Image (cartoon, rainbow, N blue to C red; front, side, top):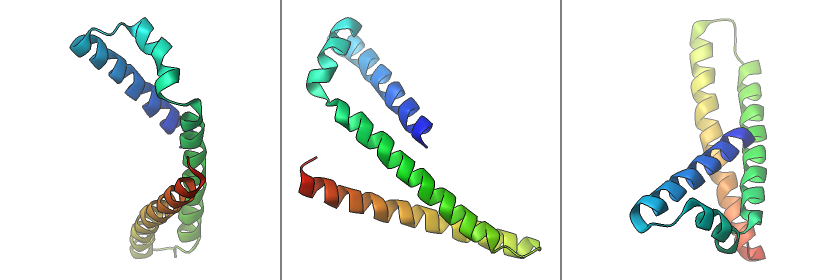
Length: 107
């Protein structure tokens, strides 16, 4: 999860740099030099930390349901479905919790 977070952040920044260059004529050098003033480095740290937490939670949910699977295909399908649905729900709830906590802190 942290690698996916970093890769997508880099891809988004490169896409933003390309779009700014094409649509507004902002050079890549100016874009990179102006980036720290527009976006705090703490945002990258925060996103990476959240992705670590989400990765751990998804792994724990997957292991929990995986260890409960019985040796038949029906149980495997039900366990997989339950694991995916529970993981998505947990990530949404924890992300909402992070949003409330970070808003109260002022981040």
